[in-house]
Image (cartoon, rainbow over all chains, first blue to last red; front, side, top):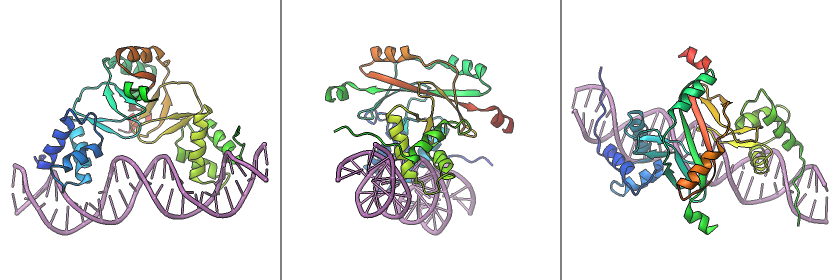
Length: 130
Length: 130
DNA sequence: ATGGGTGCAAAGTGTTTGCAAGTAT
DNA sequence: ATACTTGCAAACACTTTGCACCCAT
């Protein structure tokens, strides 16, 4: 009954795109547009389906950011920084606080799995413009 | 040139709805459905427009949660808890860490305005079911 | 060969918006 | 009277999905 995932060229291109340094925290559509330069036949459906499958398998991280969701080749939990001007997303240089999840699990009747934190502000470029 | 906002009955009903205890962290659509019981002519556009205006004026808080956005009558910054099963949103009983914003402002070249944190896990009811 | 994967297009969600008519001030 | 608001419907942005064909194994 074992079903295996296949190695399609589309999937490979999508993984590559997420890992591309210049596509920093790309959205699904960023990835679609990027991959489409190599394969003009690829469809958005394929990109979305693969991104979710890759996220389920821990190959990429699905980063939920207000506005549009992003995808990250870093798969460890970490915090993000969103520029409210240009919508650029960056990583935050402080470690994930695992103990917070324990604290909240103890203080509530929930079983916390994780938390997500997004810092919002203006990046240097956008600050200069405003 | 001063333009004032008017007190329409629609706006009043929408504020009331956000403050209703039984509508806990309602989405725009929850509010629309609730208000529509009193005024079957009200439109979704009116609800969205008013919610944004009220949020801009600090009368309600716009809470961005993965999935659908919610609205909160508590206007102070605080963290939220999302049940990944039933999607219920609750407040988290730990204070907002203002100092984190300062820390990140110092450690990055951004000017941080705020951060949002959402804890995810299963509520007692959903845990029982699974 | 066979079952996972693809492209396509349609449909689904949640939200925004242009406009003419309505209404609070 | 003025200009903010409304209801309506169309438009939007993003994402999901049904289906017939395709292709990695």
